[in-house]
Image 1: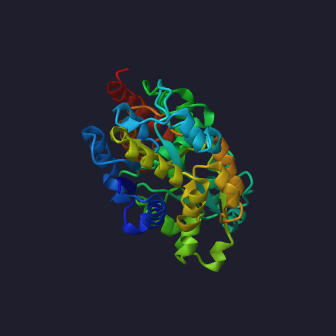
Image 2: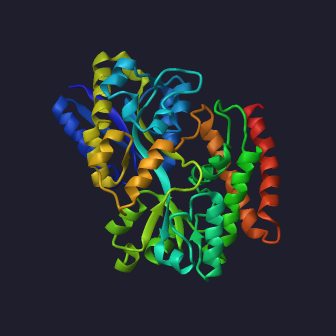
Image 3: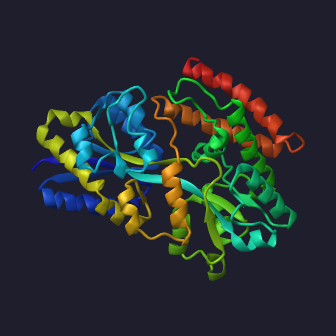
Length: 404
């Protein structure tokens, strides 16, 4: 009996329980053994990088969508032929934005298969917006209108929002990118060789994003993402929170939402151009040395990436499918989540699939944290002055890394 090694990412055994069931069913149907290895999120990248460098230990893996280009650049992955992609349904069955991340810039080969997507939305309290005289249909339409909404909320004695401001909030570049792209800017160029976050368009978006930090009261600063979820969904202390799509469903499942709050929570797209990420499935290059194992690896990826199993995975875990043909069979809460998601899946953009993205991402986390902290600490200085000075400084630092 042939064996496959499959690594999945999860902080606990429960996080990959449903994935394990899907793998076991595949195992039974194909008369082979699949060894499942769980990688905690905080150690997953290092473990995958080690597999890439050593060329052993892995056959099929779940990887972050922004990780695949770096792994492919190390020549550690097996690429997928056009025929194999067609067997999966072809590129058009996947959300357009996630398909953009299966290649490396300058290389036409497909190195990964989209498996899941992740994105952020705005959850808001209808009752609090009404109390502040804000029209919820336009409250978050643009970065400027969101600022006006926060001003109205604060003027009505309502705490506008909460956002994670603890050190190393790794999703901050994903959220801030929506504002950066609102006026046509971006963090880095499409080829990953030049920083452009200090261009006028990107800078305008970042000034408006960090201006929102002035609406954070002192007692809500320095909170983790989980603490912010608690403030909004459980305690009902704020009017707005930017959170993952699954947050409302998780709050319902965990019984932290009161009946009163449940009916008052609405959802909207973030202003600008939403970011979309997620996870891919990859086959490691080493499977090519064993034709039988290679066929089994491709069969496992085809099974996990099927519409049927993506639907099942969402129903059991709230993980969003990468396949568009899975969505008609899914239910979402609150009710307006579906049209919001449909728009995001069509217009959202990923980060550029560049080889150096992992390092760039880490530097962006540090930069954005520094800017946010400075905007909160130096209240007498205009956010625009702080943002402009910081971006100029970090532009020089990034250029040294990228060789520009």
